[in-house]
Image 1 (tube, rainbow, N blue to C red):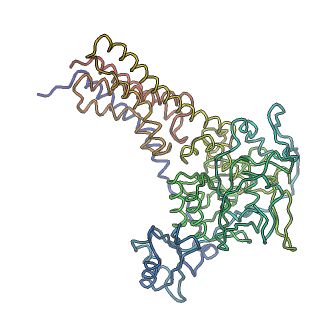
Image 2 (cartoon, helix red, strand yellow):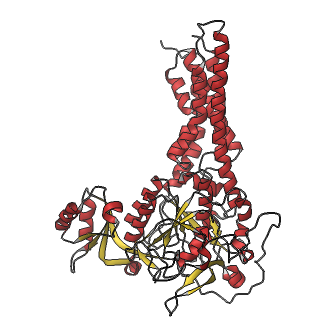
Image 3 (spheres, one colour):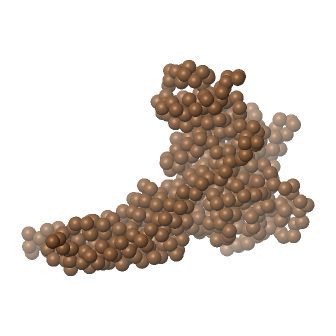
Length: 603
């Protein structure tokens, strides 16, 4: 008759208990991730948001002109590359629907072809207009121009900075004491940016010191993504307008670089094939963060595929939730790879126009002129096109979730500049550091807090460095002790296996988080001591094996406990304190139990 190893029966029960407790946050994480996307607009609205004459296709890498011609002949519709960079870089193709042809049949044929990664109808997206009620007469009853200015901190010398109540709200000055965004690249996928003098127009006056990297105009198929509408320049200004230059206003991450990508025309609208291509182009050309202050009510397969592609390449994607003034987050903001941003006004309340819904991750200043007139808008420099062809270069107070989104993108750039680049980690830091405000459907995790975000990012980075140094010192100490003892007894073996097991347990969570991201339920399972516990219960016979597993479990438990106490715990914010507390407690018990069992076991 088989007998349990000494202590293994109690440990088996501890393992079952820990599994049951772990199921709470794991189940919560799974349920949160499995929630359905918002319903698209009704079919009656489809005509206004869909191009009936064209389809779009994301071809798999390696598809050449000959393959495109072969597919074209098969479906009976001409296929061309979407832009000048499509064939060599992004593999996005357009399909023209012949007059009288069945567009759905052609689409089904495309989707069934093994050379096609994704296909859909071409949808129109736009910079979110004011679709809510008309703005009522404003009654400015508050002066927001000097909102919470802290005279003890460094403040840029831009003369109109005092009017940027939004930067005071997110505590920009405290964040700037840590970082100003150097080293991060933010792609602004929008109407373009007035980034230099061109034949179309002049560089915006307050962008002289702003750093740019090459972009692309997917509307006009040129290398000069100039803004002929004003929206994109205003958005880019919130992120990185030239700062401390005695001119105008400031940018929130003004040492970051802007990658201008034009996908919206002068009318403020664009096509999903261009937007999907721009997302992939940004990911392939070094963008750390993408801002998309645009959207529409219809999901789109190409855009979804592009967001997934960019996320896997380590790009944080920030999007405006929409300006419908009602429940229902637009696309691409609603995709799980994106950070959907709702808007608040100067008093921190949800702006009257802001869309809201379960997909909202965080809220940020977007302005609300019902609260404070023009003073309640977001003030930035931009060039508004004029009849003279030159436009009016001035400072304008805009409002919208379009204005809220770049605040979050800018703080994401600040986090990236601190060395935290995994998009799930960036999102978790943004949400954990937010100022709590409910309900979550309207404010997500709360209102953006740049100061807390960069400090949490720095703490996360420093904790990781400290753990590496701890392991190095442990190995050094072990070597010193072994070397001293070896002088007396040359047969003594090096005691490195125990240190290696403990080091693995201590450092494994950092590697796992970087690989899977904080919001992954597998990340949560992997951080648990359940894995070595299972190994122990299933068949570790020798005292040495049990001791090594116990040390590994101890390292894992110390890592998770430390991060939990310091609020840098490597899990997504959807797993709250009351889900985490019993989980950490149960794993601490089983980890200590394993170590004791290993030390007390007989060979």
